[in-house]
Image 1 (tube, rainbow, N blue to C red):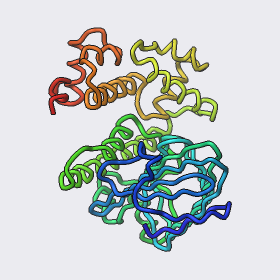
Image 2: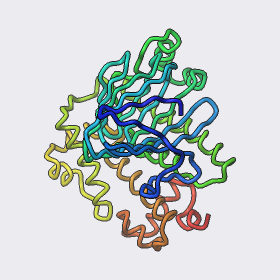
Image 3: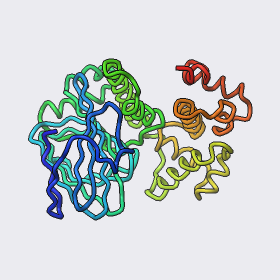
Length: 328
């Protein structure tokens, strides 16, 4: 990774291949990694390459406040997703950027110069996919707003795809997980990642497109409202085995049900019901793949009291029964 990084505390960041024994829970099987340990904390970069793109999945584990500066003297066209924690950084040509957890955007800058402020006792995780322009050009006919962004890149002008940072939905986060943790042989994983990157990009572009076409129907959301809506999403996940009604959810987070319903769709790009259904299916899939918990118990854990309803919903989402997935 030809990237120069300096820290405000004077730390010298020396990256070594692999992940140290104390951080083995960050290992991604079959994915090349480098890591560095410094007085302020630790950094881990995982890198996957494909045809026309490079994925970098990064962890920053901070024991102290620190400002990191990085520079790469090449044009960069990238998708960035704040997977864990809010992240604030300065990007040459674009100025100050604040990405809240699970927000994403596409950036172009003629050089990659960035300064990032990280807080003590915090952990940050980001997913960055850099693209060759030709990779995105093949999608432009289907997403006309992409043309203007690509024209800026061609002209060497710094640009954002969207002036609003959209939130990744459940599907996008699930695809991200699949890209990183898909368990395949090296050759098959390459094909799998290629397909998943296209899927993630289409989901992201579709979400940006919906935002631009539905601007007139949007309501004004203050930062307080957005935090309450994010809290509602967390409550849905936490109470999956005993689902809350919209009225109960609105009462718990301190919003009226109209603002919660409209705001939720605005932030997450889907209804509360669809978000919850997607989340419970993703959790069921994860439990089936990663545990030996009986299927009946998984149905109860994801809010189903009738096993037939669970199997029907699972088959509709994944094209097969829970039992067939577990047998793979």
